[in-house]
Amino acid sequence: MAVCYSHSRLSTFEQCPFKFKLRYIDKVVPEIENFIEAFLGSVVHNTLEWLYLQVKENKVPELDDVVLHYASEWHENYTPDIQVVKFGMTPKDYYNKGIKFLIDYYMKHKPFEDGTLEVEKRIVVELEDYKIQGYIDRLVFNSEKDEYEIHDYKTAKNLPSQEHVEKDRQLALYSIAIKGAFGKDVKLVWHYLAHNKKITSRRTDEQLEELKKEIIELIKKIESTTEFPVKKSVLCGWCGYKNMCSKMNCKCC
Ligand code: SF4
Image (cartoon, rainbow, N blue to C red; front, side, top):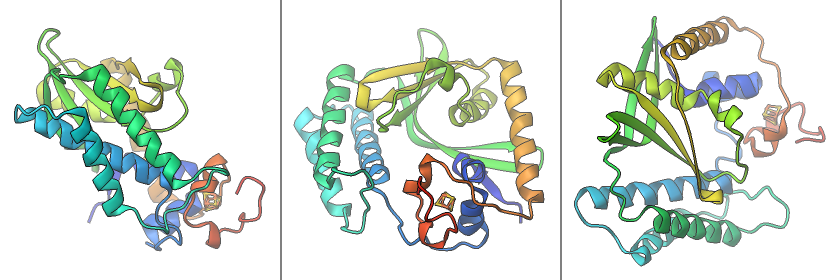
C-alpha cells in the first residue's frame, strides 16, 4: 500500500533521518511522547477550533467562556510526564501564555466574521503516485476579494521574517489542494499568537509547480534511502528519541 505523506513526515526526514527511521519505519514509541510547547499548541488550537464552531452556529462566546474552555481542556489533558525543556520555565508559565494568546486573539478578531467555512479541514494532495495529507486550521472565503484564505495558528516564540514565510512549504502545499478544488486565488495567513501578529503570503502557479517537483523529488529520495544518519540541530532538545541517539551527549542535545 502506498505511504500517505504529511508535511510533518517530510520535515522529520529533513530534520534528522535517524529520527525519521525510528518514528515512521521502525514505529518506535518515543521515550518522551509530549513536550510542553506541543501540548500548549494543541490546547490553544482546540480552543480556537471550538470558538469558530460556536461562531458558525451564530453563538459568539464571551471571552470568559473561551478562557474557561481553554482551562478545562488544559486540566483534562495535562499529564506530569509532559516535558519542559527550557530552563527556568514551569508548566504554569506555559498555561498562562496560552491565556494571553487567546485574550489577545479574541480582542483583535471579535466578532470573528471573516467568512470561516471550515476548521481542521482535511486535505489530500495527489502528486504522481504519492498522496500527501494535512489539516488546515481554518479555511476562509473572502467574498469581497473572491479568494480563499488558509489560516494557521502558531504558538512558537519566534516570529519569522517575511522571506522565511515566502518559502514555507506547509501552507503552500495546502493551497495546491484548495486551488485545485475551487479554482480561485488562495492567500496564506499565519497567526503568530505570541506576537499578536498576522503574516500573509501568496504563491504563483509557477511557484506551486516548482513546489510539486521539489516534494516529488524529496519523496523519491526518502523512498530510496537506505542509510539514516543522525543529524544534530537545535531541535534535538525536543526529540523524544534522545535516549536512543548516538549523539545524545553532544552539546546541542
Ligand atoms: S536527538 Fe537529534 S540527532 Fe538524535 S535522533 Fe533526535 S533529532 Fe536526531
